Length: 191
Image (cartoon, rainbow, N blue to C red; front, side):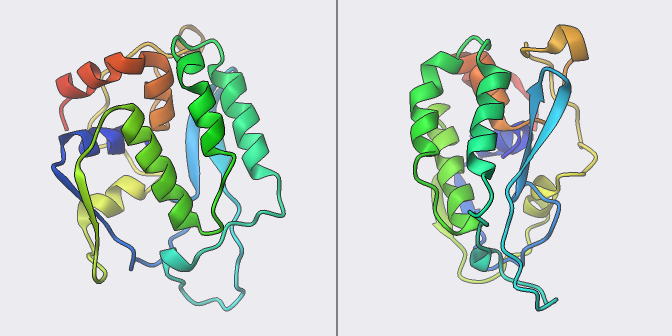
C-alpha cells in the first residue's frame, strides 16, 4: 500500500475489499517501493504461477515461499529505515508482522494493510465485495507504474538530502519518518 492509497483510506469512511478481482501483474499487490541508500528500491513478492496461461483470481494467488523474499524484505526495510525517527518505535510490531506470513497473497496484503492502518490509527469500516466491483479508483491505486494524479506534499524522508523527495513509496515510509505526525500530514493533504 503506497502513501497515496493510505491517504485515500484516511479519508474513507468505508473500504470495500474486492476479493473477486483478477490478478494483474506489476501492481502493488506484489510489490512496493521504499527509499533506500541508493534511491528507490523495489521489493517484490514472488508468486506461484499455475502455468495455465489463463487469468487467475487475486484471492487464489499463492506466495512462493521457496524463495527468501520475506527475510530479504525485512533486511532491506530495516537497513533503509533504521535511522528514521520512528522506526524503533514500530520495529517490534513490524517484525512480528513478518513472523507469520499466510500462503495467499491477498491474505498477506490485507494483513499488512490492516497493520499499517492500525499503526496510523486509521479505522474505517470494511467489508468484502460479493462480486467483482470494477472500481476505477481501486484499479488506479494498485497500478505500480501509474502516473500519479497529484504529487504528494513532501515530508522529511531519510535519504532526502541525497535523492530529493521520492514518491510513490510504501506507506511504511510515511509511518517510519513521521510516526504519530503522519495523521496531521494526511489530514492536511488533498486527495
